Length: 125
Image (cartoon, rainbow, N blue to C red):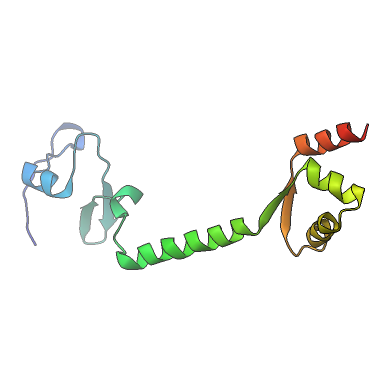
């Protein structure tokens, strides 16, 4: 542990030695945390999320890989219903009926855009 003696100036200002500022990346405008304890106080350089990136090493990268794989898998199981599928469904297409029924029974997730629904209704008129 190193000790430095600093002088308290007007308005409680202190000067942190340049060597310490460089070591901890303290620059003008940096924020520090002053922790007051029974026996004294400590100055702490808080870590930002950017500074903390990578502290978990390979474990964090593995978590990122698992999350990415899970998201890709979920995205593969989502479908969009467009006007043509709805048209085929009402025209009696067996494949379109199977697809719509799978959506209805929640075996697959599907989404319909308002524009596609409007297009479908315009086609009906």
